[in-house]
Length: 501
Image 1 (cartoon, one colour):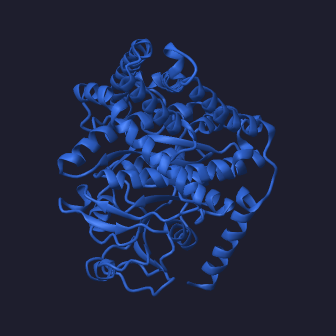
Image 2 (cartoon, helix red, strand yellow):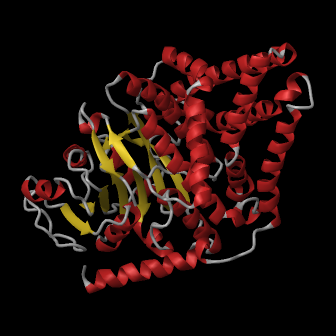
Image 3 (cartoon, rainbow, N blue to C red):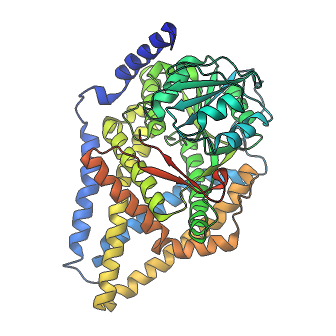
C-alpha cells in the first residue's frame, strides 16, 4: 500500500476513535437506564404472574409480546401507507422532481473472501447496469480459493501484491483489485475507501446480484439530495433448490418485504438506522469523516449509521439516511436451519453490541426521533426474543396441564393476532409492489400460509437465533462460522465460504 494510502488509513483510525463511544467512558444517562432496566423488570413481573394469576393474565408475557408487535405494525402502517399512492414522492429514489440532479462519480466495492464462484455473476450484473460504475474495486480479503486465478486470468488484472491496489484491468478499464490480509469485511472496506476517490461508494457483497437499474437509482438519489450520506437498497432473498431451502425462502421473502416497508416507515419518521451491508451506498467523505467501518463490530454497517447520526447531530449537519425503493438486488440467504441460526446469532449479537455502545443515545431528545423513539424501541427489541420464547413455553405448559381457563382467552388473542398479521401481510405485499414495481414471487395465497404458520415456526427460529446471539454477546465471542452458499449465485450444489472476521 502506498505511503499516501497508509497515511489515510491511519487518519481513518484516528477519526473512528474520536467519534465512536466504544473508545470513551461516558456515563449512561438516566433515561437509558430506565428504558433498559424497565424492559427487563417488566419481563420478570409478567413471567412471575404465570405462577400466581389465573386466566389470560397468567400469559402476561404473551399478551405483552402481542401488544408490542401490534403497536409496531400500526406505526409502520401509519407511516408507510403513502406507498399506496399512484406516484408517491418516495417511490424509486425518495425524492421529488423539482431538483436537477448533479453528476456524481460512483465507485463500487465488492467485499470478497473466497468468493470465486460468485464474483463472475456479481461483476456481470454491475457491468450490464444502466449506470455503469466509474470504478469497481474487488476488495479481496485474503482469499485462498480460485479468486487469484479468476481475476488474473478471466478479468485481466495484474497482481497488486498484498496490501496493494492494482492498475485498471486491461479488459475492463473500470475494474481494479485490492488485496489485503484476511482481517474481515470492515478492514477490507476501509482499505478500499482510502484507495478510491469517487463521490459516492456502494458496498456490495459478492453474493448479491444487482438489478440493472440499481446503480442508476442510487446515483440519482444521492445526486438529488445533497444531505443524503447513507442509503440502503431493497433486497430479495434466494435460498436454494432443496425443499427446506424453499420453505425458508418463503418465510424470509415475506420477512424481507415487511422489514423494508418498516425501514421506509422509520425513514419517514427520521429514525432509520438499519441498512443492508450486502447492498448499501455512502457519501465517501462522510464515512471518512467518522472513521470508516469498525472492525470490532459484528455488524459494521449498522454501527456505522449510529456514528454518522451522532456526528451529524453534534455538528448540526442535517445528514439523511434513506431506503431507495428503485435500487433492488437479490442476495444469497440461509437455506438450512443451521446456517439460518448462525446468521441470526451474529446479527443479534452485533445488534446488542451496538445498542450497548450507543446506550447514551437511548431516550435522548438531542437526537430527535432517533433518540426519542427508535432507540427506545430497539431497547425493547433486545428482550423481544426472550418474551417470545417465554410466551411459547408457557403456552405449551398450559396445554400440557389442561388449563382451559387460560387457553380459551389466549386462543382468542392468538387468533386475533394471526388475523392482524394476515391483513398486514396482504397490505405489505401490495404496497411493496407499488413501491418497487417488483413482485419478488410473493403471492397473496402464500402470504396467508406464512401468516398462519409463522408464529409457530419461523418466528421461533428467529427468536432462537437471537437467544444464541445473547450468549455470544455476553461471552464476547465474535466468530462468524462458515456460511453455506446454496442460492442462485453458487449454483445448485452450493459452496462453503468462511466468513470469520
